[in-house]
Image (tube, rainbow, N blue to C red; front, side, top):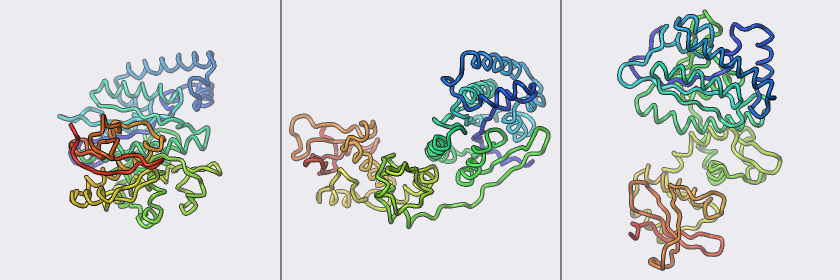
Length: 375
């Protein structure tokens, strides 16, 4: 197989239970499959003892095996990685390739993640283990919430690696079928390529990055405030969200939040919205004419404007008591009365001394000004 130039790679690997079930007798395999979706608190003392004994045996077997062909037969995940890396798995010179292991939020998932993490680190790789809360196949709603969290993690993590020169690769050889199916779709937006192997000994199947984009600009702009509030993880009355496609929402018949697909749409679209202009305030905020004039006069770059809009949206949650004070905001009351009518200030940009100043009028927080801090 022709490898992708000399770029460092970040490989996201979906993890299943193959390390515990490959090459074991049918009775042990059946019991592991029965317990695959259990968290630690779900396990009886007897079942946990049985699993721990088996996990420790398999961990010792993996760490004591030097033959890579034997390792490939032990773990579907490592089979995929070893095959993708040309029959061996060694860090490249200089900055090593990095790995993310995506495991289920179960006792077995977390233990398997620990074992593969340790094995990869022993070979010199940088490793993260992701276990989104609720990521099991036992409950459909928990699974979808975990997928929404996974979308957010990918959007917050993977672009930074790509900007640093990494090639993003999804290894979908292991893991549950439901997770693999979702990751194939997510990979169309994030991965430079995806790969998998049907079974040990078969050839590697690769899927290159496809030119996929989400054309949702009109939808986002039509329902701008709803998306901004949902994007902040605010729960809204379902009636307020009626104009959005059902696939973008989780709802209980009364309240709604963004679904995994809603998160994908919002995360892919929000910056193009945030960097256009000073957006109208969300509930709980009002902008003074002086503040609007000051923003126009600053002639902010698109990235600065996007951050300002993001901070203002976060502030709307803070002043309504729906979120704790974020470090990025540092929302606090002014000492004395140095800048009337303003009574509070908060940060905007981490590398700039300018702050937002404002005051409460009943339940509304009025943004009075944006200028350098008072100290």
